[in-house]
Length: 269
Image (tube, rainbow, N blue to C red; front, side):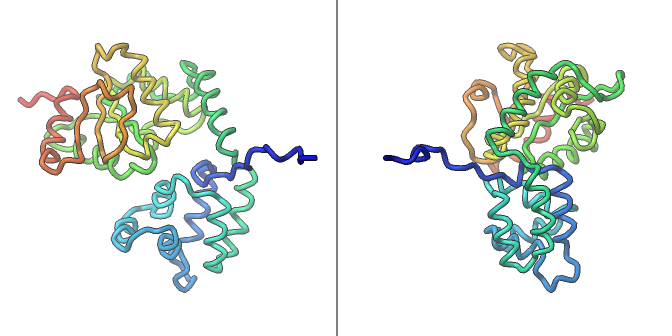
């Protein structure tokens, strides 16, 4: 007689990117360059396949471990534990196990994100002050944080002096994140910049934020959505009919900032 488990689905492995912020911060602190004779985050980066140049770039980040992990979309917690064990970092493995237990499997994580977005849309718990207005909200996946920060640096400085909103800096902590962000996008931001990349294509939260903007401007009549193709990637069908700025072409990169500023309403005197 065939086993009743013959057609059972393979067990899902939990992803590092679905861990709590506290868990990722804990790993970041433990893997910092302290006194572990080199078996720190840089060795882990090598095991994860990062090049020497990429590691040097990560080293310039304020939180290199968190940025590194945000780029590893498919990295599972069990696989990370194997790498850490091989590095003889059993202290990190021990801390990781507690956060692993509370992390949801991918299918459950996605379901809860969708339910939370549908349930809380339009019912924010914690929002910006009523008179706080922004020229645009930056919608990005964690793996594209560095480019999102570059947009802030370029457009909030002279000569543009635009006022942009980004989640980690401008949205107050507390409450339901998706509902709060939905409220901010709808009520506080005139336009939405969407950073298109493979990271974006695999990030449920970034996709949810962008779809809020699409729903607020049926047929894009108000032209609220401004996509930027940050890297060569498959552009989702719903964004293909919207004119986007292309950062992947070196010849057009120098025109990106004035064109983006103009799309956001900047009018040089």
